[in-house]
Length: 165
Image (cartoon, rainbow, N blue to C red):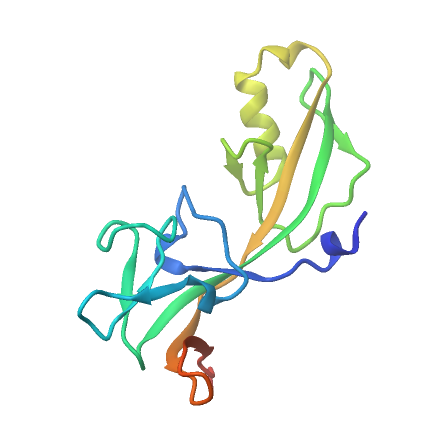
């Protein structure tokens, strides 16, 4: 197993975009800043893509304002063999921190490997035979506040974490 699966990079998504359909997380909260709103001092925060219209999924943030971002870590894929009776096994380790599991297409998300398997066994025509599934595992952490600031050195907008204390 790759080192990345055991030490995944933390990526970020604005909290208001984390839902049943979520855009791909980005490397930092600042990576969501896509420019200035027209005739404004407000910075545009991307929605599902950098070209999203304001009011759809894109939003704005003023310098000094705080926006909540959720950390995301993607772990290893888990290959499971499911028996007709619903029992399953895997030789892949399942990370204790993983709290979300999805089928390989992302069509169903559950809180455990068993929940994903149960969902597909109820709908899959292969339920009466041995079947193999690939399940993705990942973790969404609690939202954290970041303040939009302007760098004194570069003049560029960026998000800085807000201290909890």
